[in-house]
Amino acid sequence: MSKTVLLVGMTLTFPLVLIAMVLTLRPDLLHQQATRQQSRAMASAPAERSRSRQTPHRRTSPPAGSVLRQPDLITPSRSEATRPTPLAPDPAAIQNLGTLKKELKQQLDGLKRDRDAMIAHLAQTLAALPPASVAKELEALDDDSAVLVLRPLSPARRQEVLARVPAERARRLGRLLQATPAG
Image 1 (tube, one colour):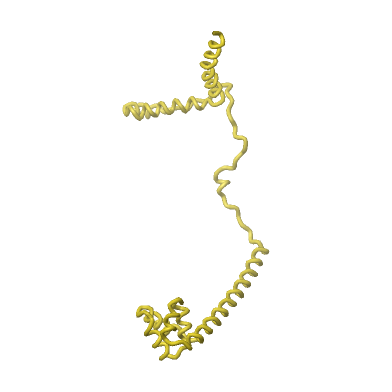
Image 2 (spheres, rainbow, N blue to C red; image 1 turned 30 degrees about the vertical axis):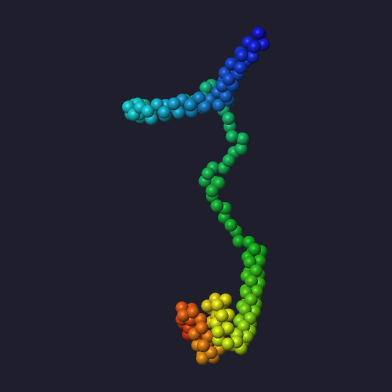
């Protein structure tokens, strides 16, 4: 029987001891709970709101002898944390970017030359085909590439090919052929 009484007594006193410890370490919790209860009371009674506005609520200081928790790290103020750091030009990075730009330009020029050579070869190959076959092959090309393929053809041959292309695309290609200079 004494073990049961001891167990029941410990079970009942443990929450009280725990609450006392929490309040000792965090006295602001009691204040927060009281503030929440006051907020609920004010929300339910509009007449009490006007009275509470007349007497401003003062925040009480923690009890004497309580332990206040201080932040472990000193953090910079918000304005210091968001202030951008000035960037200084890095001559090595600028030179590296210039070198990369030159290399990319050379590669781009090489790709353009290769594309032009392939288009010229395709134009020569398609020139030997009948107009219906040329029109079928043009379906796979975008308008700019189709214009580059059609340009070397004679005007009569071009008209034969365009007659076999869908009407809307034939009009677009005809306008592009007139608008873009040869060469």
